[in-house]
Image (cartoon, rainbow, N blue to C red; front, side, top):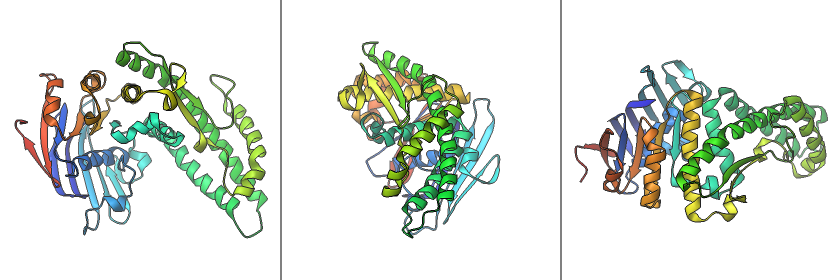
Amino acid sequence: MIIRSLHISHLRNHQDTVLEFVQGVNILHGLNGVGKTTVLEAVSLCGFTKSFLPTQDSILVTNGADGYSVSGQCESDLVIPYKITVSFFGKKVIRSSHGDGLSPKDVIGEIPMVILSPDFKMITFGTPNDRRAFLDRLLSQCSRRYFEELNNLRRILKQRNNLLAAKSGYFDKALFEVWTDQLLQCSAEIILRRNAFVQEFTPYFETAYAHISAGGEQVSVLYEPFGITLQQTTPNKPDVIDVLRILAKEVEEDEKRRGVSLFGPQKDELTITINNGVAKDYASQGQHKSLLIAIKSAEFEYLKNVRNETPILLLDDVFSELDIQRTERVFDTIIAHAKQTFITTTEGGRLTDFIPESTATKYFTVESGSVTEDSLLL
């Protein structure tokens, strides 16, 4: 997949920006805070219907404007045109080549993309929530059913937690059991899909890290559903529900005391290991950077194979934190296999030596929400 052109209207400091991109490497350079990342946010809106940064739609709107609009003209690997427009004027409206009045589930995955930014280092450094966010973003691009189950999980937890937190003194046991049963069914579905994904993804990750580290270290990814142990490599849904039902009974009284659900996939862990140690506890800073590059390289290859479509690659200010060797590895392991890459940087000239002469490259200078094309990067 590639994006041929992008029209950004009233998104952060971009009033009216129209850009045409190359199939190859597109570099947006300029000082910090001038609107480089906003262009990548616009690309993210086309793919995910939201920014890859944790923010609300209302925050994205240019000060004084009524709303924002982003339109992308795209082309698939099979040279099939695809257009999408995402706008927000009090509520979000999504239109694409597939129709009007769409919801996120109708478009997520149509433009597969892999994103790397400094914030994503929390995948290896951070909390279980950071790793679940990575897992959910990737799986949602691969499976509409998975995305629907995630939304279903949020809905069920909201209703169940409202019951648990009610202060009226009356506890509706029958209704609580209805929501518990729905949580069991939804949880089992998500757990099975996460478990299958980790088994499929691990060889991609191990291969990518072996290439980056020259095979000197052993890495793995372990899926740990909260409070239960999966007895089989490929467990079946009824067995998972039975195990979850036992756990639900064990925590029920504590849930009533605390007023919140205490089991379910919202509490799962994805553990990344290096040399049999947990990466977040034992990896050096250099190893963390290599692990993240390997994870993103594996994500790219996995998504490409599952979707049968080459993902777009977004790299937001990542090279300022990488030495020459790791910069070379990013170009060798990910960018070399991408059809289209978007890079934001304050040091555009630093990257020219890493781009093969045969790769189409376009440079853009960004200044205060205004973007101009460079015929030559100085």
